[in-house]
Length: 367
Image (cartoon, rainbow, N blue to C red; front, side, top):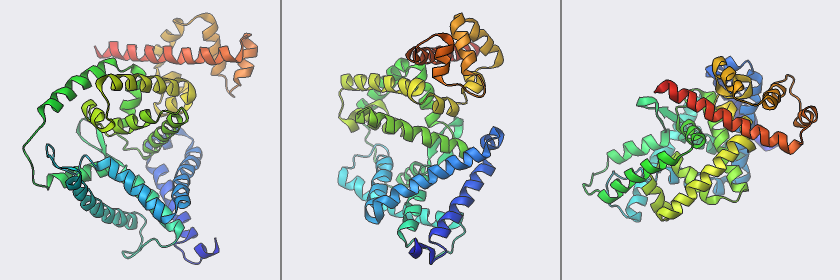
């Protein structure tokens, strides 16, 4: 570490910038301030930011740059050309490289500006490069508010603006347009409430810095879960859905037939539900503002009505789950005379019932 500490912009500089960024996020985030757990959030944010930095540090300069460039290029590949253009790979690739060069200039200027660095600052050490590459990824993926409570990643908006400056072509594949509309409608109809709510939240506005961090954490954890389940197709599908690709575009990119896509959607739905209601239920429900302390996202009236629908043993089970300080599942099993496996099964069942009840209640209010 000695060679890093010779310069302020080495280890000390990186730590100072990291500390300032965490303080800024925690101060600006209404959600974090209202949580009463600012210290917990600070530690979580530090872990997230340091983890990103170390990932690029371990990859080194060359591999890190390649990985970053590949990741960002994949996000904007379909956005850099004018809509309806018939550009082949070479033409689109040339536009992509032009766009990325311009975007990297924007990123280094943003890095200097946000960290109040000199205009000629350039990362030089391996640690500084790792910090800068982590910032580049985070900056590119920042979500910008749009009309209608929608948002989009900053790099996508930049690519779309870039494409509008290119000569437009008039040819449009009407078959693709019509097929996309039909398949999207069918997909929306078949999507479960769990999948729909999780995906909408992933695509939703993230003005609050704390929400943005939680969103990234959930997505990263979901990707790791899908990889652990040996579901690379589901990882690809998730990435494309987060880019708001139509069903027809997904078919084309992944080389799927309609039947293969239907099968992939069913697998994706299964794993999303398992992830949300079993594997990482606490993380997902905290992110949705529906953790146990918040009555699983229900109002007091909804919660009271929901409890009435449960059998007596499940109501007692919920009471034990809400006990503070929290008691272990093993202790709950012993109290109720259940096996630990029954505790897990019952909890998954209660979560699913609560999810459905909450959505039905909100749906009836809307109608």
